Length: 98
Image 1 (tube, helix red, strand yellow):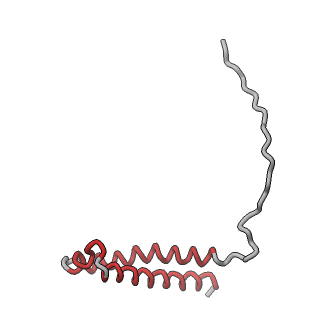
Image 2 (cartoon, helix red, strand yellow; image 1 turned 90 degrees about the vertical axis):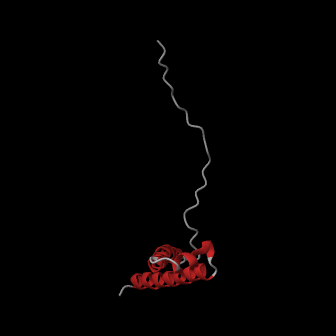
Image 3 (cartoon, one colour; image 1 turned 45 degrees about the horizontal axis):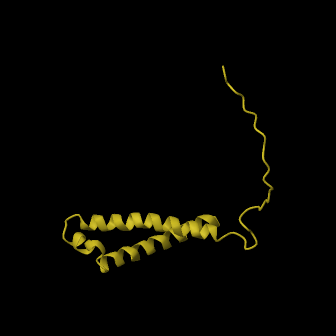
């Protein structure tokens, strides 16, 4: 398996674990009364699953993005620094007077 694919899978798993912890904390701290909403409706498990799934998509994307951005060399400044002197450019304007 290529190294980039392993890196992606590893960080997606980390992202979903973070989403699971985050959702667990949301329920445990009863933010926005989520614990009551999930435990007192028939569709509560589906809501909890979707909350973990969508948070997992976001967290794994961020986790993988951070991993990719950290792969840059230390001496890489992130682009070329070009210093230019600004000079006015003459613009010819045609008059349409009749």
